[in-house]
Image (cartoon, rainbow, N blue to C red; front, side, top):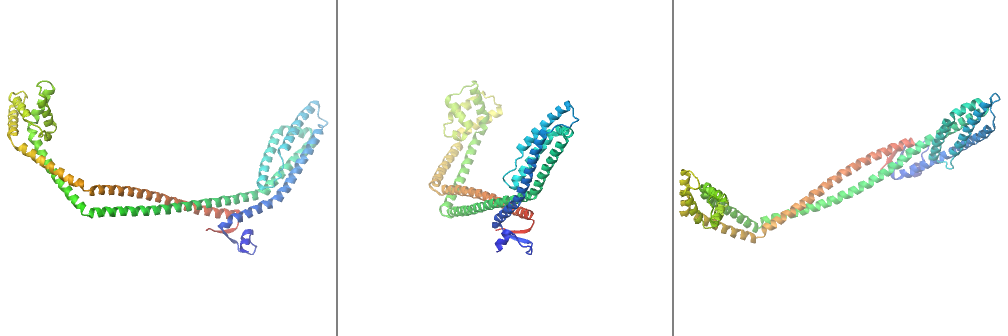
Length: 429
């Protein structure tokens, strides 16, 4: 019984407020829509009969007008003008009769389309016959009055049709808005469900990835806390100490050759310019000493020393006496000193120690494991961040959709109350 009351309305003594379930709203509105349509059909049919009668009367008027003669006072010239303008009016009446066809369909929308088209055709008739009707008024007053009156009657009948369908048509438009709103809400609810499914899927994926990251970090911590990693760190620390000692030795070697740099540079330039050409052996040793003095100790440097001493003594390098004497002193010191040899031996020893330590480290897999684990953790964290971004985007999308749904429901409620002019409360699921 309650459902039937909701479906077909309420009695006068029932409360003004009506409660409707959203699921029933479409059918309830459709019933009201059909009731409105059916209620308008008999009246539309009656008005169509009136309009049909007016059109038939105009056909009779047209025949009478075609058989009419101008007033007796009209001369021959006026008679020709009368015939010409009568033809114009008759022709346009025939066009009007062809254009205004009463529909068989008694729908409100069909009636509105018929009304707008008919009024347009009637306006066109009046525009096309305005001047001719003035002549007809003077020369065919009886026929003119009849046609003019029946045209006015047709226009009134069309106006009556519009008055009859205006309110039902507006009501049907408002009910159609309800149908659109219901469809919009269904679509939004479907999108919200899909969005929530995506969020759940992404949350599950995020949890799984986060668990994988934590497991990978735990494995890395276990590796670092194991016995092999501290040993590798100790070896690595020792390698760093030996490498620093080697760098210190190499710096000392470079400093040994620094006082000779100016003299060696001039020897090199004079050789390049062809002023004092060096032997290939000396040229090669000179290039090494200038560019990489540390590796020069791997070669026999005596030919270079001897050449440099001769060039200094002959004064061919163009050094000032004080600089020349100091350079000579340094050359003899290097040549006869055991310092370079000692440095070379230290360099060789440190290189051997580094090779041994690095060999030990290479035999240990812990660093490779650590690097591989860190890369794996980095990839997993990137996937985790990407999933988090997607999850945030979907949550924002859900928030927007839910806001749209609230607005759509509010709009629907407004359209329902406007359409049915009742205090209707819709219960949404």
